[in-house]
Structures are given as structure tokens and as C-alpha cells.
Image: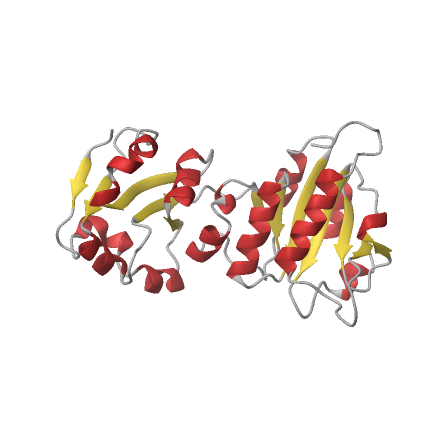
Length: 275
């Protein structure tokens, strides 16, 4: 067990990073992030690249979290407080009773992320996803269906925002992630790495059910409303999900789950079993 450090004063400077969590989220954390809840904090502790700098727990939860705490590197501070003090520190009722301060690992270049994948790979490429719930949901689906990574354009929100991490159930800490640089041509990047671009659109040329997944596929999703840029759709294989009546679109996180499941469940062209 690490050393437990009781905190009695909400203004204690040792827990300054946890104070007024929501307000701090809005202005950014300079390379750090907050993880909330036992499942998410476990993902942080087990992540290969990001690391937990400290934990802040409700004192009544310490015993139940002993197994998790034992996985922390030696010397990681674990602060504890009563529920009342914890709520005052966070600035809202912290029912889960567990927070962690994490340090982001440097993001790889998109080309490096693609180069690190195997002969069979699935990459999720996102454009203009500005809603943290949607972004977190897409990462959760990417983890659940074995995607090899997620690449974000400059219009996507921060996957390390506390709400995105929470909605993803910690997947944003586990799935390899890169961000396109300004002016980078995503389809040229995919082509150079041997990936086929599959773009989701209500006006797609082929139904998802009729698509045989290529061995190395990049699945392109755009924001709700505008969708993917026309210039990208014109250069990619376009796919649609048929719907009943006059409905023509789904929530983008839901769409990503359907598409990723199709790719995970479909046998590959060479007849070997899909992952």
C-alpha cells in the first residue's frame, strides 16, 4: 500500500490541482488531466503511456480500493479526505469518491501511429467532433471492437477532458491516439500507409452490410449535422447505414459502434478469423 496522506483543509496546497474541478476543466490543465471514478482511474493506473501523478479519495473508500492502490508506483501520493471536505475541494458532490491527476504522454504523429499497426488494422479518423459525449462514446466503441487507434483533426475536442474520459470509461487513456497537423492531407497520409479510407455518409454509394472490410481500413466519421467535408467524400469509398422512413442519420457515436462491430465481426478476405 502507498502512503496515505489525510487532508483536512480544502485549501491545502498539496491538493491544489483538484480544487474546483469543473472550472479548471474549462481553462485547461497544461499537460495534465483529471480522471474520475474507480473504473476510469484503474484505466489510468494500467495505461502504458500516461501516468497517475496522485490520487484523491474519500477516506471511506480506501479499504475497498486497496487492490488498485497496490498497483501504483512507489511514492505516488494518495490523499484522502472526508466526503464533506472532498466535495468542497472538487466544488460539487463527488459521489464516486475517487479522483486522480494524470499526466499526458506526448501524442505521436499520425504517420507514426499508422506505421505502428500490423498487416490487418482498423483506424478511426474523426473530423470536427466537438461534443465530449460523442467523442468519449466513439473511443469506448474503438476500444470495445479492437480498433488500432484514433486520429483526430484539429476541429475535434480534447479526448483528455474529464467528461470525455468518463464517457469513454477510460478508453481515451488506452486507445493509441494522434492528431493531424494543420494542413496535413489525411487521405494522402492513409494512402502512403496502405490504408483504404471508408467514409460514413447518409448518401454513401454502398450499404455497410454489403462492404467487405479491407485488411487495412480507416473509418472516417464527421460531426453531426455537417458530416464529412465534401472534398473528403469525393476521394474515399463512401458507405451508408440504411434507415427506416425519412430518417437519414444516427448519432455519430452510435454510428461508430455499428461500423466497428461490422468490421470486427466480418471475416477478412483471406478467410482467417477476424480479431
